[in-house]
Length: 327
Image 1 (cartoon, helix red, strand yellow):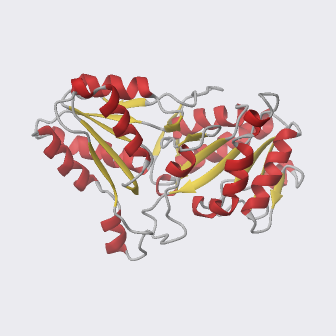
Image 2 (tube, rainbow, N blue to C red):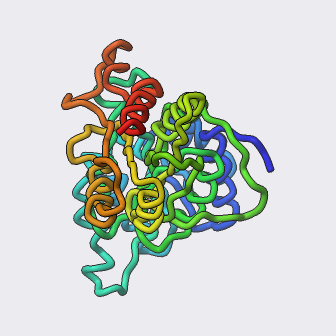
Image 3 (cartoon, rainbow, N blue to C red):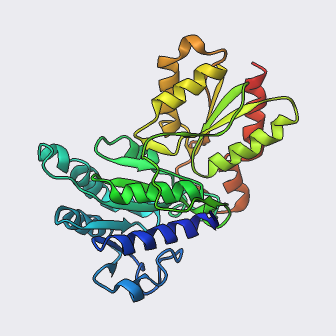
């Protein structure tokens, strides 16, 4: 058991997978000689060479297109989007090609590739370095979309993603890279892509979150505990596939549900969770399903005051928990 930061967990897991399987390779902007903008692949090009660590032009569509071809040729490519925001030029390749090749080939061809995307706000990244795009990709059958937010989960789920036979969008919240630390079990363990995880037990209500918001929700649940409110916190961690069984079990157990996500509230991934609970567990609810999400703003502001206004905080989450508990 070792303690690591989230970014160290990404680095170490990639390094282990590179050493384990010579088919694994990575391509993206500055992933080679610079070691990536977050230094995730620092030292990789020196150990594995330019044939497996490819610096690319600023051309996300080409990065993903080449990765698709490599996957079809028998490799295990990892396409790094320097920021999730930059993935939109590759949307056609991701959605029209990677997600649909298994369907188009009647199951004969898979596309075993990972697209890593640092995502989310809270880092003063403004318009083009703060977006949450999980709902866009979560809408697409044929993709798997995961957002682990602890070092242990990142390690187990990244191994699973690299070894998966289909394309995986692997979201890494930038604000947690160095701020979050945790224990990573020893050994070559994996965590399946799909199951949610109850990170905190509670009996009065259930809070669902992923990414940075998971940590904010855990802080909020701890704050209201002194007031006699017992809040369970579920780490959704997989957007597609979505763990309906765990989500519904926890909803029925407490009867009160709050869903927290930093993406724009309307049509966000949390709306799908809310719809699932409303459709399948309505008779077990003691209050309306509540949500906290980002405002109807086209982009994350740069200045700190407005960024704080956009982002849900432990304080705003705690206030909503109190409101729901009193319902």
